[in-house]
Image (cartoon, rainbow, N blue to C red; front, side, top):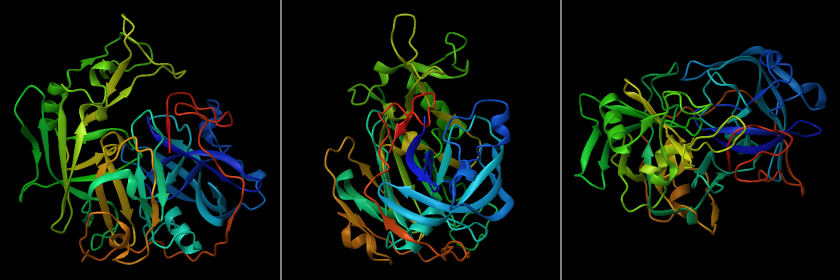
Length: 430
């Protein structure tokens, strides 16, 4: 389960359906002649550079991307034309992966919208800003419920997509990554605490940071799973009422923890809730209310069909992982409960409770500067970032910006891809 957008790349445009990843700094496409494609079909939106008249290599064979799950991509950097919706930007840096070492098959490319380091070419958000498409290096993410489209809004927020307060948190200087440790260069936050509210039992705190032991988290749309340390994970498993798949279902790992989807549907009266409280290096804290339903996704076969038990009930899989480390990932399963604003200029993440299944929109642009969000956000709790923020890539690029009448639209349905990219499985669109 992942979240994707449609873009086109090249001249003439080639449709690419790319995974939205707040945890990576740059766009990456699979080369049509990638070594991965020699052992299996690669009809998943790979990019054929020989077919684009605007393709230009800028850094040959120096792209090395390593991911938290030990996966990696190797290739080069190039520039080309990207179209999103009706906006066209030329000369955007993109990674082209020739060699792939992944735990799971790379069904598609990746839209990396995390902060660029001093070693990376400019990322997409930086390219949008420097081209004049947006005023601030800021974007907002609304994932919505699994049966609905969400939205990814560059340069602004949608005030109809959240409720209550929008609380800004200062991101932390990272003690973990191979980057400079004297400045903010990632969307890293503290987990202040996680409280579980079972429908049939007392409220209990299952995770809490202390002065001597702090837990960190990275909100990451590029991963599904919510990582928790052993003690908290065990509490969730106990409350979730799941059973291992063992060998009952084809295409399902024996270790997968399952429950019938009807038992973990959204809005049930007798369901467990969680309160996730996040903090940064300032005084603000933001609390999200999650339902147990947020932590489950449907189980599907390789052809995308729902998997059912012996009596015809569709099955859902728990997407919570045990991770014995203080550095944890908050994946898109838990992020669905929130409305997220990622601000690269100010090194901040703003969080509010999502207004799920909203049927209206009020998109407003956010100006650059420390006051930009406060000018337009409803019920905004602001904070000043006092740490130094890594201010993007030093690479000098020249962009051209234009608009066109033909748009790159939605996928053809909430559970399908355009025919051109033909990816098996159930995926959701933004």
